[in-house]
Image (cartoon, rainbow, N blue to C red):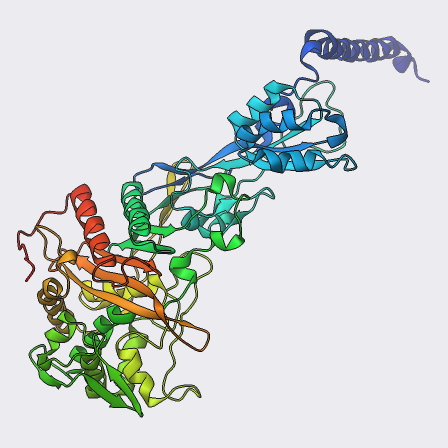
Length: 566
């Protein structure tokens, strides 16, 4: 051992002694902090104790087009119980029922299972209700906090939004389609290192999810849902939907579907079928609204002109089948506009025969039927269109399809096709998300996407004028005060088993306004109305109400071309 080392040895020992002394002091300070200063708070069930808020990467917010909240991140509670610890099951059930929004008998039945070590009472309970339950200090009741979701508008647009489940996954609607963008990531710290002396920094900082801004307008959505709810009551319909779209872009302003559900209580539905967005996931036979497509195809191909006539004898025979008008009447000499005004099935059959199967089905495909629209929502189906060459297609199908029976479409397909006529013949891809934000900055912006030209601009203009002229004759109930409107009713029988039901129908109306400079295209569909089984009497007035309210709200100038009924 050198003399130099001998000289420095005391200094080294002193340094080590000082270092250990400092560490001991820090340890004592830390222990004093937790065991004395914070002793009273240990064991309390505050939010901060239950969940490390600083480490959470919160899910992004969903806004409407005007930045009103539709879905926001929140703290929620999963509530459970140990039945053996609860002596007054009925009393506890009575206290919890209004806070869990669950029937008392349901809670009591679970609490009666004394042989179970733990039972789940509710999941995703809102923060305020969870705090209220904690304040009750009920023995045997356990609350687990987790990041969750709150939907300020309740059931509004539920099928479009979807929900965020207890496994922290977005299911259905926008929540599922944009789950990877909405989802945040939690922060992480070094594992297996004691946190006694101080809190170590994150090795990965928490990251909040992106925010999503929809094309949906909360006011338009609420108007559509209110009008639809009133129609279901008035006509005793089982359900229905209303879609409002900007035909120039394909942006969906409202997608109202009833019956619905409350995503704040998504688990309390009778069947998962309640979650389905029936505007894109359920097909129906459109009936006479499809005459818009048939006439559009014929005008575009030059097979007919608006002033062309035919002799309506009340029936037509195609492929060995006899087809009649809806009222079994013969109307004599009729124009192409009369076919729309009187919704003549025999007239539609005549037009389809003039057009021919090849050109008819080519137009049907151009309008997007038999294929998905590629709207940015999960669960869309393609509908059903049989075509020549298919083993189950017959020549009579051309006649049947011409007036909207024997084929099936989705509401989003139907409204998008009508929007193509309103948009000068150009089919647009529908969409519901306008932009995505990160830290308040736009990182993605939707751009209207033309899919293809369905018909020529000239054919679209001719058809628009025909629909304007026909509407007050077909149903004055669809006329919008102070605006020109173009639209068509539909009343379609429902295929059940191996035949059409004589009593059950789908009543619908599709159209656009102002007709010469369209800003809105609206579809109204009512399922199985009992008190009024015609689209002209049930769906048309609903369409007019929605159109009038939305035009006023959006400040769309009246074109002063008031059309009066005859």
